[in-house]
Image 1 (tube, rainbow, N blue to C red):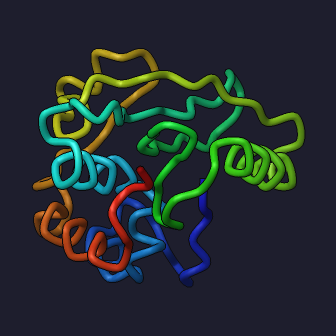
Image 2 (image 1 turned 45 degrees about the vertical axis):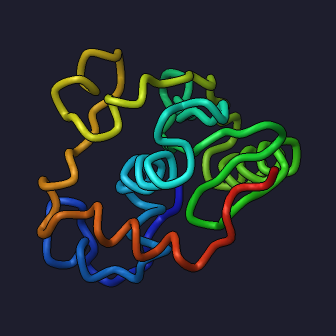
Length: 153
């Protein structure tokens, strides 16, 4: 839901998109890659109960976003945040830009995060695979994760 302020920015310009600062890159269209990297690093076998969660805006609104949900927290390009605090922040900020904005929260299968084909099977979702960026976005996501502690216990 982050809106880039880079002059002349367009998601269609692969070079400009890739050259965004990391936080902005993972806020504007690569959030699913970051979610995949966190899950792969800290819950690869799925036993810790972490899962990808899609914020799907209601009809007529924009602002898709994917986070990782854990017990009582969410993770995205900001880092970890209590679920109630995060939901309040996201809703308040989105409604500043788009009055009346609301979203449903949909748990995603993990394999959707790295497959355009599988993501398109879900109504309203269309994600790029990691290799569909200018360069492979997975190594960039893994490097970005080193800025954060492991998930809360």
